Length: 461
Image (cartoon, rainbow, N blue to C red; front, side, top):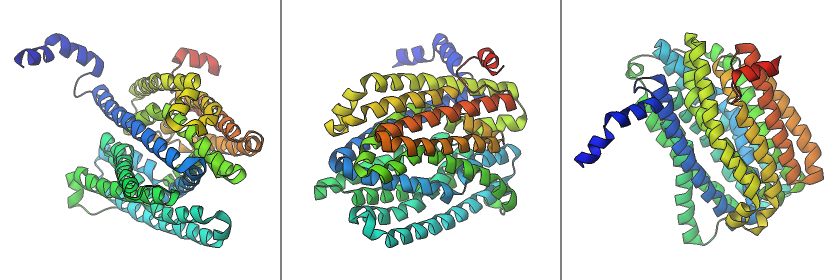
C-alpha cells in the first residue's frame, strides 16, 4: 500500500495531473472537475435511458410505445410554459447574485420561482384535463388514461426543473444534474421492474404513472439538496423581490424555451397527428438514440453556464473565449464517435437492442445523427447568448428554426412519414445552430464552434 501511495503522489504524476486539470483553485480545474462529474452522470443516464427505451419498446410494442411517447411529448411541451422561463433565469441570476453577494434577492427569486411554477403548472394541467374530457371519445381509452395520469407529471416535471437549475446556479452542477440524469431514471427502472414482476405486464398508463412517482420523489430529493446547499446568510435575511425585472427577463427565456421545445417535439406531435401512434413509436426510438449525440454538449452547457455568466459580469472576454472554445471541443470529441456509430451501424444496433419491429427507423436515425452532429459542431450558442444577456437574439434565431421546423414537418411527414420527420428535424437543428453561431460572433466577437477563430473570421467576411 505504501508503494502505491508513493507512486500516486509522486512528483511526476502530480505534474501530469496538474497539466491536465490545472491547479486545484483554478477555474480550469473546477470546469474540468464538474465536466467530468456531469459527463459521468450523462453516461450513466445514457445507459439508464437505453434500458428504459428497450424495456418500454419491447413490452409496449410500436403502437403502445407510440401512445406513451406522444403523451410524454405533450407533457414535455407544456412543462416549458409551466416553468415560465425561470429555469435559465435561475442559473444566470443566482450565479450573478452570488458574485455580488446579494443574498436577499437570491432568496426572493427562489420563492418567486416556486410559487409561479406551481400556479402555472396547475392552470395548464386544468386546461389539458378539460381538453381530454371534451375529446375523450376521439382519442381512445388508453390514450385518455395515459393523459389523465400525466397531468400530475406536468406539475412535478416543472418543479423539478426549478430544483435542478437552482442547484446549478449555486455552483452545485453535479447535484443538480443528478436529479434528472440519475435519480429519476433509476427510480423509474426500479419501480417499473417491481411492477412488471408483480403484474406481468406494462401498459402506457402504468408506465406514465411510474414516471409520476419517480419525478415526485426526485423533486423531494432536490428540495432537500437545495436547502442543504443554500448559503447560510440566506437563512438570516428576508427575501427581496424584483418581480418586474424578473418577469421581463423571463419572458424572452420563456420564448426561447417554447421555441426550443417546438424544435424538439413538433416532429413527434405532428407525426402522431398525421400518421398515428405506431409511426411515433418507430420514430421515437430513432430520435431518443440520436439525442445521445448531443449529451456531451448538454453536459458542457450544464457546467459552463454559471461560469459564462460570471465571466461576462466581470468583463473578462479573453478568458470567456478560452472557456467556450475548450467546452465546445470537449463536446464535439465526445459526440463524433456516437454519430459515426449510428450512421454506419444503425441497422444492426436497432435490430439487436429493440427488435426487428424498429429496424424501419434506421434511415431516420442516420439523418438525425448528421443533423445533431452539426448542432454540436456549432457549440452552445443559445447558452452563450442567454448568459451574456442577449436572449432576444436567441429568440429570433430559434423562432426562425421553429417555424422552419413546423413547415418542413408539415410537408415531409405526409410524404415520407418518420423519415420525413427526421429530415425536417435535422435540417432545422443544423440551420438554427449555424445562424446563432454567426450572430454570437458578430455581436460578441466570440467563436463558439470547433472551427479555429481565424478560419471562422474568414468565413464571416
